[in-house]
Image (cartoon, rainbow, N blue to C red; front, side):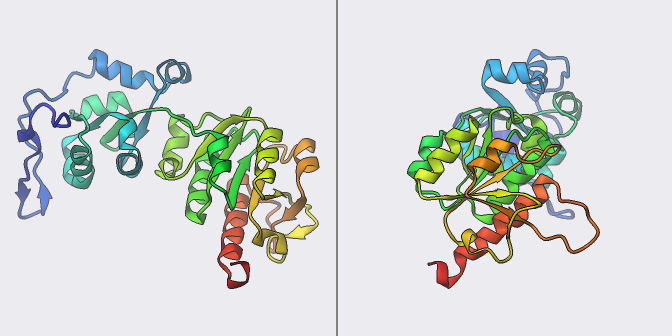
Length: 296
């Protein structure tokens, strides 16, 4: 098995009876302990967009994201790095990675901190492979989120997570949107980035045309929409939702392309919802409508 680094003895099942935790061997011959090593520098450099673009790789940080990457995208993972404490706390990540025949590298806390201060002791380097819009359309989607020039990475990751939770078939980020392999997008998606197709670099008109041809009604989320997400029968149909930017909202082009404008009622004193919150409400409303007996 190639996934054992530097030997299987590092990962034998030894347990501390008192704490009921796996014992990560203290004396790790071959473990990475030099924070100035070239490999450490290469991993750290993936925080830069230009490096990610040149290498077609990106980092996955934190136990939740790495766990889901290993379970749903192991074929794209080049390396997994884990500290002693993280291996003891989340042994299932190491087990799944080794079962998938991945390279698992034990590293010191100093090395992990140098690679990424946000990794919580576990990090993976993964190949960036983007799904194609044609594949999404060919699968006959019933619920898709289209994000028009969404640039905030936290909101982008949250929309991906919401779409995943609502059972959406895909998320599409149009030209001008944030790069979905940026560390903050990956972290904020909490692993959902690896659960459903996330298409990027597509023109809004191309996305709308393709999804409408696939049978989707195109709805645009807008505070002044003539339809309510709570009552409109349109959301029971296969739906492609368009969500606008954080600052300007929907563009005039998006409004013109949509079959209908749909609002989320605000009953309190809040002036508006941010795009991630609005997307969550709209996607869950569609999901609930699709699950209703009358829509089957």
